[in-house]
Amino acid sequence: MSRQVYSVDFSCDDWTKTTGVPTSGFTAVTDLTDDNGTIYGWFCTSIGQWQLGTIDPTTGTMTPIGTATTTRLQGLTSDGSGNFYGISTDGNLYSVSGADGSLTLSLIHISEPTRPY
Image (cartoon, rainbow, N blue to C red; front, side, top):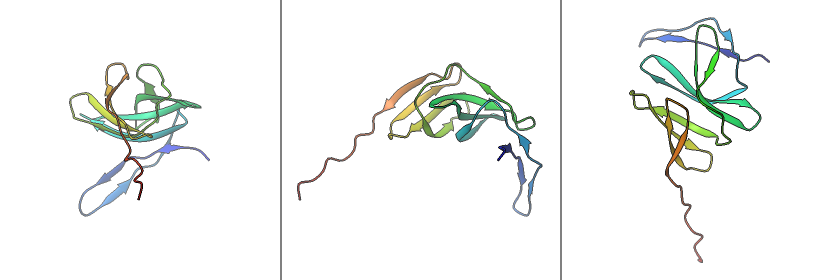
């Protein structure tokens, strides 16, 4: 099964899917976000290795930013000014540098203790 990237042009009246293009440079992506017209994502580049990157929707090519980490982000968003935020699989919130893809732990998820009753 080949992976492909599709663009969707939509308005309230019509949704048009373009022809897909094959992807390259990654094996999976957990989320994509737009930052001023550039599509960023959290990509798996090899087994257990994740990193920030951009994807070109016309070629399907991912361009990595920085070095890979073992932290898997499930959600990624942008504030529109090159600052990114992601939630990891363990529920922690990270800020993600758009310059080098580095992660900074912003909020630690603490699960509710088990109640004795």
